Image 1 (cartoon, rainbow, N blue to C red):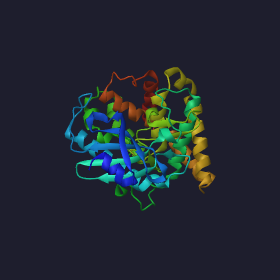
Image 2 (image 1 turned 90 degrees about the vertical axis):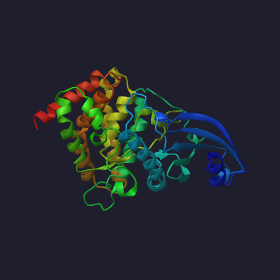
Image 3 (image 1 turned 120 degrees about the vertical axis):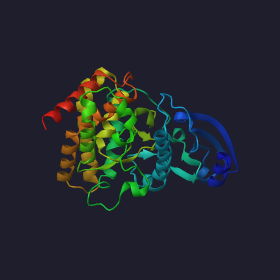
Image 4 (image 1 turned 180 degrees about the horizontal axis):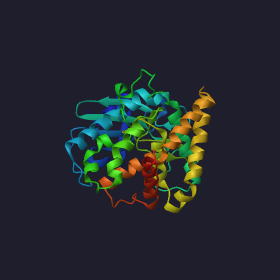
Length: 336
C-alpha cells in the first residue's frame, strides 16, 4: 500500500499531499515524510509517516553491515510499531510522545502514521544543550521510567519481550554487539565487558528504557520548558540511568558535563522520586530504586563507552569525561 493511500484510508481524508522528506532512515531502510491532509478526522492538517522497508539491505555508513546488523534493524522497527500500539498509551502527559493514528505491517514493510509534533508545539530541535536546558528532558525520562518501574520486576508476570519490546533495551548492549566487542583493543574494559553487562542486567529494579535517548530524539517547545520524544526502536527492559548517561553524553560540552553532571543526576532522582510517590509507591521504595540506580550510573556510562571503543574509537563521544567515568566504573569492580 502506498503511504498516500495509507494516510487517506486511516484518516478518512479527502486529500493527501506529500509535503517534504524530514529524514532518511539509517542505512537506507526508509524515510520519514510530512504529509499535508484536508478533510481528515479531528481536523488534522499535517501528519508524519515513517515508512520502513524491512527487505532493504544497505551499506552501513561505518562498514558494520552484517546479517546480525540487518536482523537487529528489522526487529527494531517491529519493536517501534508495537511500542506505539501497545505501550505508548500508558504514558502520562509528562512523558509526551507523538500520537499514533495507525500502523500498517507486512513481511516487507511497516508504515507508522504519527502526529506531527511540530504542529503540536514541539517544533524545536537541538544537538547541544546548556545544563539548565537538560532539565525538561530529565523530567521526561523520570516520568517515563517511573511509569514502567515494575515491568521488569521478578514478581511481575508481564515480560516485555512477550509484548513486542526488546528483552534488553538500548542499541549498544553487549549481547547484540559481539562484532564491536571483538574489534576493541585488548584491555581491562574489554575483559570486564561481560561483568558490566551482567551487573546491569541483574539489577533488582528494572523498568523500560527509551534505549536511544540522545538529544536529537527530543522535540522541544519554543520556550524549551516542554519536550516530547521520538524514535522508540530500542525500547526495552533496563535501568533508568542507562538513558540518563546516554542523554547527558549526547548534549553537553565537556566542561559543562564535568561541572554539572552531579547536579543533573540529583535533579533526575528527585523527579523520579516525586513521580514514583505520586503514582502510589512508598518513599522507601523510591529510595531503594535511587540507591541502586545511582550505584550503577558509572557502570552504565562505561557500558556505552565499551560500545564506542569497538564501533568507532575515534568518535567524538570518546571524550576525557567518558574515559574518566569508565575508569571509575572499572575501579569499583576491582574493589567489589
